[in-house]
Image (cartoon, rainbow, N blue to C red):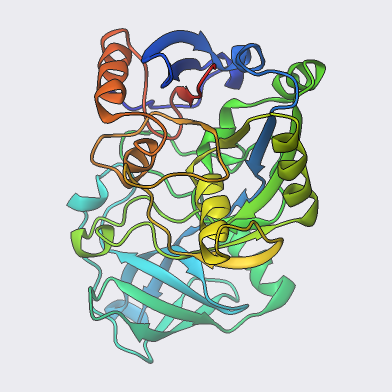
Length: 346
């Protein structure tokens, strides 16, 4: 499917492929039409994680012998230490898999990002020297200030123009946990939520740290998604229980919401528990969701782990047929592209 090369002029004008697994059917709509496919007592759950400017340029060494490295934050370990992926010469206009590898860095290597932002390599993965942990010298507000001053959004070669941080923020973004956008929510606007509420649909939230979708290194990409942290508020647990008690459906906005809810339930013997956790759950066709009824998400390539997750909500044959239709009529894929709702209408 052709990737979207730029953000749409109106977010909720994105096309919406609506798949009904109960009737093995699919329809064309727009993201703005989402409320019409919902009913009273349904619950929409969003990931309110804000997206960091997680790509930064750094230099290794001093003077004429210094070398350039692009650092893409992968996930936070603690207040100062992050897992990161290193890329060599080039920029986001080149495919990650075509980028030159960064110079091999050993534990103890210093990275300078300019200004007052410096870090030290504190771990190198045995899977790939491109996957490292770095510990920043700054901490607290000073560290966040420098990251926002030096960083830019992670983007890929199919988007030729530089993205602004707004381009990768949902309308309800809060804490900066994600290194890539929880992009399903980019299609949803205040007017969509207002129309849903008017139909008796409720809204709940959680926070999930969405990670990188690609590193350019096959040995690391095979492990994605890595274990990711989440926080589920008590209000969301209660809202899900209330919706289900009234016969409402739980619609997850994005694969990260599914991972958080189902990962939490799997870790607690089927019970959804409020609080902070980490999930490494990988969901595919053999998985039977116990919390989530349907999913509103982007259009994913068949080889991606995100597509595997969709197979837990609809048969593969139906997904392939619907996606073939979407491609034939010009739907656009990837994080800036069109949307997909998989929800039984029964």
